[in-house]
Amino acid sequence: MESYYNYFKVLHIFFVVAWFAGLFYVPRLFIYHIEASKKGSPEKEILTKQLKIMTRRLWYIISWPSAILTILFGVLMLTIIPSWILQKWMIVKLSFVALLIIYHLKTHVFFKQLQRDQIKKSSFFMRIWNEAPTLLLFIIILLATFKEAMTLLSGVVSFISLMIFLFIGIKLYQKYRK
Image (cartoon, rainbow, N blue to C red; front, top):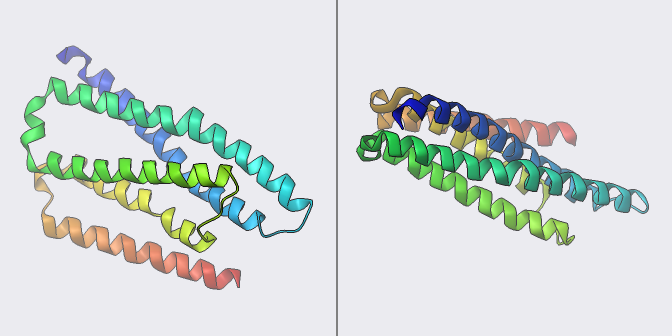
């Protein structure tokens, strides 16, 4: 099984990229859907119908399969090198992966609501929601790259710095739109 490790790693990375493509774009489509719902007829009906189709295809054809395959190949890699599961960096990384899965599941709740035209969140909320996978990806990559060399302090400082940078960007964009 060890001879398959690099193949599993390639497939894991490939599906991580595909999964994140969906996680980055689906909330963006939610924003467009929420904003389109405030337009008048017939623009509202035309846009929301098309956005629902686009979102449904991306979510079910790219995002969900990629999430499942990412997890599958990650688990296969851990079965080849089971000692990693006991290392601090991997425990922390898997904690962030768990947060990512929770994010994915909550995004699915938003997806189902918008497919039924139940708009419960603002486009501003979705802009902030859209940044969560960026933060999670950043910290997961840091942990996977630096492993034990990553100190808690440097990780926290990096995470908070990126969070502040993204929030400032959102606020500037909000100001620019007005």
